[in-house]
Image 1 (cartoon, one colour):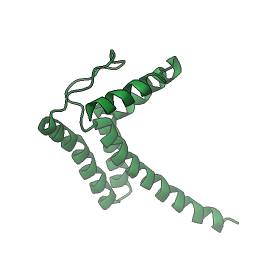
Image 2 (tube, rainbow, N blue to C red):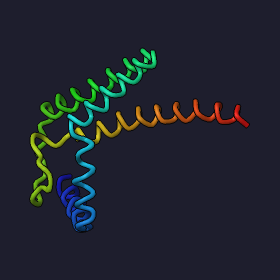
Image 3 (spheres, rainbow, N blue to C red):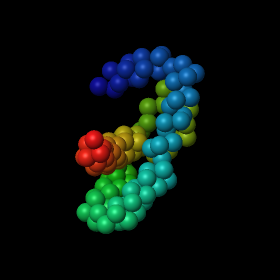
Image 4 (cartoon, rainbow, N blue to C red):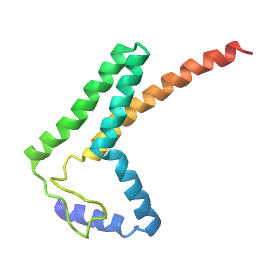
Length: 130
């Protein structure tokens, strides 16, 4: 099992370029806890401002679960990070599940839903103006 993982990781690492490294460093910021917490807080405040209490509660609950569950699972699984090369960003703790992946999946889905709802509310207004 582990040998296949190392083979795949080394293959991916072989595709590294300075541009991809820069893009990774930049995109890594969006998965950090303070950034995710700020997005959740902003969306909760936005929905409360609009009187959308269910959406605000959804953002709050998903945000809290996204912050708490990966850490709890990491300590239970206790899977060490594969250190095959020097890291390009600061990493600490265990590797599984990825907090960045969990945050991206959960918050990305909620942001996508929010965007779809915003676009759906704009389209009827645009068609009424015709």
